[in-house]
Image (cartoon, rainbow, N blue to C red; front, side, top):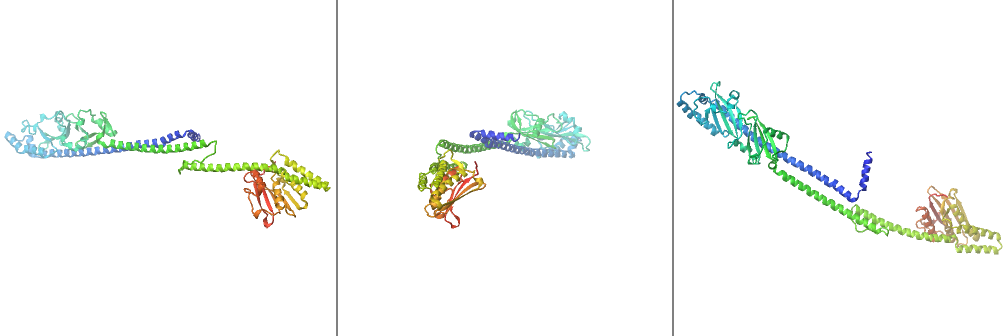
Length: 588
């Protein structure tokens, strides 16, 4: 089953037209890979840019958070110094009973100290003291009665103690958001609480620490990690772009900061980062619009997408140009072949490129040339075959041979040699029966050798002792098929051209040998030999039309391995050897 599926796919692919294959190849090789690589690349680039923007937002949030922690530590340290100022603690405890002494102490020691703290500490926006004394002095100058303290703070004096507490208040109306630090101040013996200090840090003071975030239309919010004395749980820096928007609560922001890389607030994509401060105990959240934090993201993505589209367009144009060029060349070549069908094939000279189609065209032109040569050879072979058939008809009984035979019979009759005249008449009758029979162009080698024997006997009756012959045939060669009249022209050449004009005559020997691939008939005479005593192969037998006719018929009968070879006898002996090769061993 597994092997059948690829075969079915291969069969389906082979049945598709070239245009459909081109479209499928374009989609599979160019469109899908480029689209996939472009999509993945765009996502990776955008993800990388967003990650960098998230890291930048977090780094800036960390920087601002450190500034808040430094300010908080400084405020705690300054407030702690008040506890160890004896004059200050005694004043708050009401150790001066006289009003004049209290006023003098306030003006000479307390007021200058409070003014110094306010002016010398850039982190402290204001410092107030809530005392238990019933007759506070300097009201409006930073010292007031504890009754003015927020109840939620006043009720937690024992809990606040030396370590103090932080409270946060969101802006209301025209007031600014603030961070406040409360600490209990005790008497000189550190037993009884005498006042509570309230140090206020104006949140606007830290705007410079988050300037890079707010300049991006960002939003920074702080959330208390401890119970808030004012009932509020957060404060914020915000740019004008966020005023009036519906912002999520801090827990929701925290969840988004932990889970989402890109969130949405009022359908606006934003980046959210969060950090935790140990002192003051705060959770800070930064919310920055994606378009501001990663301003170059869209531009990079657009440039990348444009580059991918440009690359896709270029590859599409190249693919189309190559495919169209190949298709046009193939169609032009096929039209040429179609126009040439049924007629003589003509070379195609319009495509000379060195690619595969050019190679195909060259091979086609070479094939046309070879076909032309073969057609010409066939025509020549047909002409020679016709000529050979005519010669074969002539060889059945030439008028000259018949005239000589009849003249010899007449002379024998006049001489009174009736026995020899009768024998020659018998031989001529048998020879005529074979020659005049045209029932088939194929005979057996035994019949062809017998016909050659009759031909030699008739000539021997005329020439007497001047002609001698010997025939030796292997038993398994007699049934081998061969064309008719292939030996008579060879034997006649031996007599006519070999020694026919010599007074002493000559000898003809005919032999047949058989091997696994062919049957070879050898005809030798001891005449003058071939001209130049050189061998001529079966593809160019030469020496008269008779040999050429025999050669042509043998090639047509047995293939290119059949034919006639003529050469001189070995050992410098005078004479000629003709070999007739019949390929195969077809027997009747």
